Length: 563
Image (cartoon, rainbow, N blue to C red; front, side, top):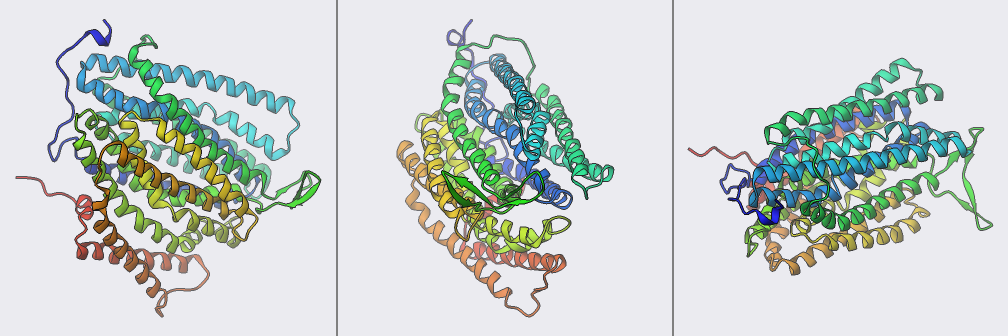
């Protein structure tokens, strides 16, 4: 029978107990902890990459090639299909039988596999044709070959992310959050082993090592999928052959189409930025001579970015995404199933309460993270990356980009919550429209800035400006769409946050004037500067929050068990 003709007793998996699944902040703590481990390993991974590969052609080729599987991961694994799937699967578990919900999940997975297999095969054919029939420079050809090696990772990483979405609806977040740890550990191991097997002082040795690292990506992807299977069986999911065209699947595709387009626009922005940093940066010709100008409609134009801009921007993104992943994305991941289930309520008051709590905690984390990363950008980059083939000039450029990105960490964080709120109420069109606006604003702002003193940091400035605009507009529209979120009541809370953040910044500025503050231009002194600034800023901010009675702090502290 079709789902429309069966009306069984509802199966309810969500409850309101303080220690039950509705405590999304508790789940966010677990995700944050595991994400912190993953991000620390990610920083170590990139530190090793900077040491052995530097910001040269081999590193640039790998950075651009690895963008492709990550693009599909965000489009399919964590993007369109999962954004539409989680609300529908949550509601199916709440209003239909467990078997019907499991059948819907299996059909969704089958659909994803069919789409990804088709795209992978087509992609490999296209890459083979490009490599075989186009005359490419050595660095472009290396990029194509690395992309061909890592393209099957699309199926593995998207499958892992989508299977993780099933577990998230059942409030099993641990293994899903731990999966990226496997990738980072695999890349660390393959980078170290590759550096031992080949001579990293020569380009040929770096090329052999980067091929080895690319193969390590595939091995890590297979392990990521395998580690989720026992938990999937525990929640009742089984791989099964079932029809791909059911009313529920049709509904999911209808909802996912605008999300896919919106995610596609966002990822197009990422690809454009990566492409701009690749094509508008200085490069080497076949004789290893630096090319500093290009011809545009008969005019000689200076390349606005120096050699290695693409990997430097990637490292800057890694640093600003560190607090974003540890706090904001963790909270958004934990709150999404709750918002999706609460959106079923007639008056949506629980939905609004959960959303308000999510916004408060996000701002509590995002505002100090924005200012704090601006303050510690230079010592952080110097400590993590400035060794081996990574030069002080690279440190200066990456630090400048980190500061520009950091301006909008609070907006990046808040946008994670706001977008999921739209998806929970099945409004996928608004995020789509705003994605186009973000793309246009980003290009309008960043392109002129590239030829200013900002250089490649202008790209970070454009990204920040576009996300700030997107977040403010989407939050205002959500207020009108869902009824009153009582945003005006946030004013006292926001003023307290700003005061606490200002005190933190002032304390960090004052401590840099102290006679014990290390100023030597080496990594040991950079570690000292970083530790002093981090501990000073954290102590002052947490102390100010406690003194001002900011309630969001209580959500992040361990709760005492009830007797």
